[in-house]
Amino acid sequence: MNIWLIMLIGGLVTFGLRFSLIYLFGRFEVPQTMRRALHYVPPAVLSAIIFPEILFHDGALDLSLGNTRLLAGLIAILTAWFSRNTLLTILVGMAALLILQLL
Amino acid sequence: MSEARKEFWNGVRAEVPLLIGVFPFGMIYGALALNAGLSAFASQMMSSMIFAGSAQFVTAQLVHDAAPGFVIIVTIAVVNLRHMLYSASLAPYLKNLSLKWKTLLSYLLTDEAYAPTILKFEKDGATPFSHWFLLGAGFSLWFTWQVSTALGIFLGAEIPREWPLDFALPLTFIAMVVPVLKKQPMIAAALSAGVTALLAYHLPFKLGLIVAALVGIAVGTWLEGRESPRGMI
Image (tube, rainbow over all chains, first blue to last red):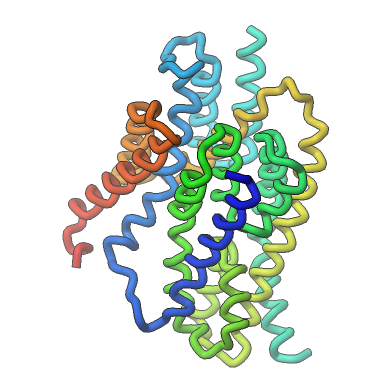
């Protein structure tokens, strides 16, 4: 699909979600279970992207020390855990990958 | 100064601390979208067409992975579902506005605009000009997002091609996920989604991503419900 069409539909969907209940106010109550489920969307979606990115190498699972992205990813996870700083996590992770690739 | 203008600037002022955090984020988005293979123009336009940080990062990643369009759109919808909550929560305060105002304010309704606005609305209630506060918060965020995206695209073009910059996207996601992993259901949601993504990796059309996200959401929701049965009511 064309990137412009994706962005157009994605944008309309996003707008629709934001507009939905402001427009429909009074006709629909967000159920408790859905409210609860929404909290888990970010960690679930993002983890589903992160795991294959750092654990797969050339289409196969690679848990060895030779997987530089896995090692750099683990270093980034530790950095994020202790610093809680987005920019620092990205910088440390990138630096770790660049250094590991040179070794 | 008119009451409307005063509320607008109150909104801008309340937004400033958040803008400081948003600026580098927008720059990173711009640089990464370019690196993921989007044109400079498309990268910039996504910031106004979708105008939602995490969804834009995820879209850039999926374009980079050559995921099919419908998977990207479903993922954008899932990632942005939480905006329905904001919509529900602000609706009572905006119910008397015209359709034009509702449309404009909905377009500007992001995490960062919602946060200071709901605090203000809950404190002061709906006043004749309180929607101008949301306009001030939302517009200042929109403006900052466009400028920071442009700067990121500009600087991103200077980064040498051989740098493994595509890795910065998963790193950004790590930086976003790890800090929220405080309680057991959150950790379980992240781990179960991650492991499912590995198992379902070879599903066609990148559907593994959507399956994994749903598994993670279900596991987290179920565990939380088991921990606090009163919350089920």
